[in-house]
Amino acid sequence: MASGTTRLSTAPYRGTRDFLPDEMSVRGQVYGRLFAVIESFGYVRYDGPTLEPVEIYEAKSGQELVNEQLYRLTDRGGRTLALRPEMTPTVARMVAGHAARIALPARWYSFAHFHRYERPQRGRVREHWQINVDIFGAESPEAEVEIFALIHRMFAALGAAPADYVLRASDRALVQAALVRYAGIGHEAMREVFRVLDRWEKYPLAENQALLAAAGLTADQIARVGEVVGMDFARFRDLVTDAELDASNLGRILRDGLLDGPLAFDPLIVRGFEYYTSTVFEVFDSAPENRRSLFGGGRYDNLAGLFSDRRIPGIGFGMGDVTLFDFLGTHGLLPEARTAPDVALLPLEAASRTELLTLAAELRAAGLRVVTPLASRGVGKDLKDAARQGARYAVLLLPDELARGAVIVRDLARGEQREVPRERVVEVVRAEATLS
Ligand code: HAM
Image (cartoon, rainbow, N blue to C red; front, side):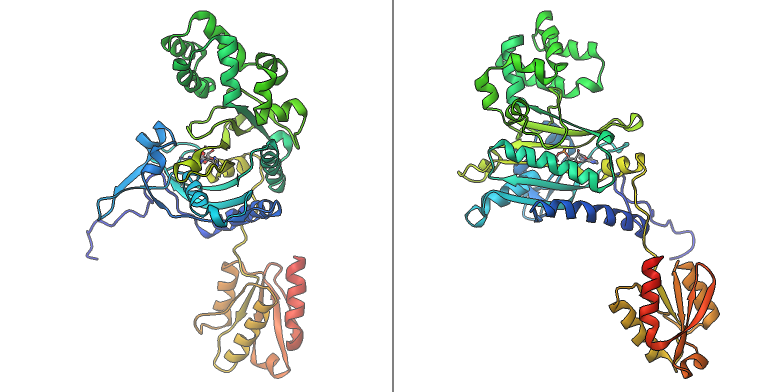
């Protein structure tokens, strides 16, 4: 390129991120622990396409997502597509499409990335990753109980204490019944009331009350809505009938004490998607400096109905990477990056090259991460390279020692070295590397 030419930016597109190896090492360890917990509950992994017909979101994903956040594109055949903003419509499509050969209830999970056109800010980017965990074909409250228990196990596997986060849950249908009976809210205003509940904690009370008034609620109704949102379950249950509680999985869980871990009933949990039909939940960080929603989910009993006549209820959640890693950072729970090789073999000389490659293969087979020089540069430079890469050990294959059937094992962290018989190198290095 001629001098003076404008170089392209090395910055990634706004709201997207580059992940360097150190960061990937940390992320990989965290995901590894989460996947292990999820699989221990019998969930199996799936994946789907990044491009979907835009209609699958238009149907039930909600106005904000569809009108403001979708990355839309037109393919060469004139079809309107979206870069997937979430997994739930995709997985509902997959389950509906393959229903004949999927044994229900099915426990499925995925790890995938999503695009949403949002203003980048703390916790919000334009490309994020989510772990989605869902159960299909289960109507009973035991599905909710399992999903909640799994969430608690996932936090425990990350080293979080129960006090570090709060799981808050509601049931849209149950809260709606309470608002009809106790506050006399009519069908026309209900949607707007839920929209206001969804934003309740983020905006001043007066502003929320003004929105309720604009939706046609009287001062008494507004006061009653304010009462309902502050109720714990013991008070709230008096607002609904036994039949309504029986019809609510969350109501039954709370009334009958079915829980397997802590949960806070909270009518302010609404969640934006239209496909949720009853249970909705969200997990919040309880650290004062990071009091925000970490992730959420809910029950969607009719989404598969977009694609087939068969009724296949679903319940699950999507855990986002940005908020998860903010949480881990806030609570000092990030693991150390692990990118350095365990062993560097050197030098690369014509006489000992075969011996070096054979020993490298043996050490790798023993589970160690081994690097060899890519050019003949001599012992001194190779040792410097090994130290720069952070290798813990260097194994030196030098003519005098090789002639005696031995090599030198150098501990680069301590700067100590010793001669080890060739046939014992793997055993010695492996023992020391696993100890250190
Ligand atoms: P969602 O609440 O839209 O739910 O997204 C799930 C999580 O993904 C959020 O709580 C957050 O952690 C993360 N997330 C979403 N958008 C962004 C963004 N722009 N930047 C960073 N992180 C983001 C769903 O997507 C549902 N489909 C989840 C679900 C699964 N419900 C049932 N099953």
